[in-house]
Structures are given as structure tokens and as C-alpha cells.
Image (tube, rainbow, N blue to C red; front, side, top):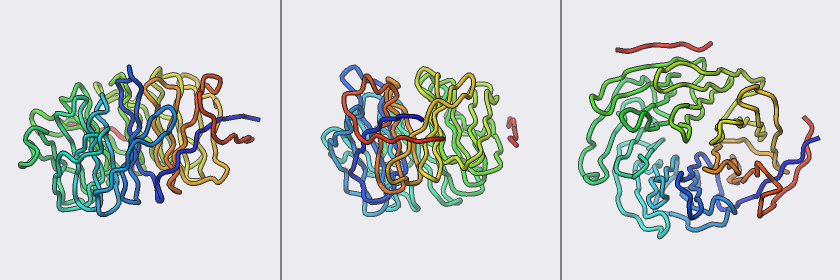
Length: 322
């Protein structure tokens, strides 16, 4: 019997498809969320209290990214726009037009550069200079044969990774515009996350989870799982990782041993679509298909807020994963 504690955070009326914590948290940390209800939201990451709802998108919001100091938030959506906000004031600062649904965005730590990717195969990946973002992108990148799901800066922003419905994860050099590495998967990627340390990439796909070294592009660990994985996240201290599934369960494992350390499931389970650890590792945020966000407390005795309690039983270098 496992006793896991989570804080329920209402606020979205449709699926929560992405979550983003800021990394610098001397004065507290914040959590941004993207909803298919057309809302990007910002809340206090430890309590779940809402700060603002950003409502200028005219269609579903697919992606959000917070700068490390939480001052700038970028959101991308089905209205074919990226909107850049003063996160705490809720004021739109910039609007970047695209021709198709913007499926993914990623800000670098200081919010001086921005990556975007679209859901259709014709649109290129784009790198913007935030000082000149009303103009054309600094650089465009082509090579995926289907639409893009995720983009993340890595290797001190010299490179970035992209995942696509073509079942690949590719690395691109931001200085030359060339593709440097690729990894091929049996299914398309569900989530792509750079660890706080910058030296591990967590890749969730339907069959399991992969931990990748972005410098060498070598697989550090490949864990196949007996359920369809929909998202994964690695804790800041690399002690545990969490995987979600389409039945609404989130499973916690020891990183070194893969031993099961617990699970969380809401009173009314809904498919897990997004997972993200807070920068102190005390919370794993869970975004669900029903629009709910759960702040799963990793150390309940230290938690200041308690929500639902649930008892449960239970040149191009190519690589291929099977």
C-alpha cells in the first residue's frame, strides 16, 4: 500500500499538454502550463496558487517555456503564433507569426534566444534573436520528414535537440545550421527534457524511457516499461525519475536501480500528458488530459499544502534503439 500526496490545481478546461518550471528560485519558483483551452497560465510552483492566465491566443496553446528567472514566458499555439510575455505582469511583449500550428517553443536561460517548431513537415525549425524577433529568424533548420513535437537548447546553447513524428531525435548546431547527430526510435517521442545539469536528456516514447548524453550522443540508460509511456522527467539530484501513462498513473523509480518507489493516481484518473520536476526536486508537476495539474509532493512531511490523498496497490552519427 502506497500513500502519495498531491495538490490539485484547477485552472484549465481542456488538456494540459506542457509544463515549464523556472530554474532560479532564490525567491521561490513558478510553473507555466499550456492548455488546449487556449490558455497559458502561470502559478506559484510550490503551492499551485494561480498568478495569471494569458488569454491572447485564439486557439489551443501547445507549448510554454519560462526563462530561468521566470521574468519571460513564451507560448506557442494553433493560432500559428508565438507570444512572448512579461510573465509576472501578464503583458504581451512580442508576437511572432508562423504559417502553421506552433507545436513547441524553448527559451534559452536568459531569454535572449528562442526556438520554435511547427506541427507540419513543411515548416522549418527556427531560431530567433529576441532583440530582433520582429524580423526573420536568425537561422532555419530542415531535415525532419514529419512534424516536430519538441525542441530544447543544449550544450550551453551551441546546439539544440528536436523530436519529430518521424520517430527521430536530431541534434543541430546553432552556429553552422547543420545536423550533427540523430537517434531513431521505434515510436515517436512523447516528451523531451534537458536535465538541470545539462548533461542528461530524458526521452519518453511509448515503449519506455531513454536517458541520453547530449555531448557524446550515447544512451546512458534505456528502460523498457510494460505500459504506454506518455511523459517522463528526471529529478534535479538524478535520484529518481517519473513516467506517466495514458491511464492516469505516474510511476516513480530509482534512477540507479530502476526500483519502483511509488505511484500517484488521482481520484478520477485522466491520461498524463506532461511531467516536470520543480528546481528543488520537492514537487513533480503532472499535467492531465482533463485539464488538471497535480503537484505531486516528493517529501510529504515537508509539504506545506496537502491536496488529494489516494491509496493505491500496485557528420551525422546515427543510432537506433530497439
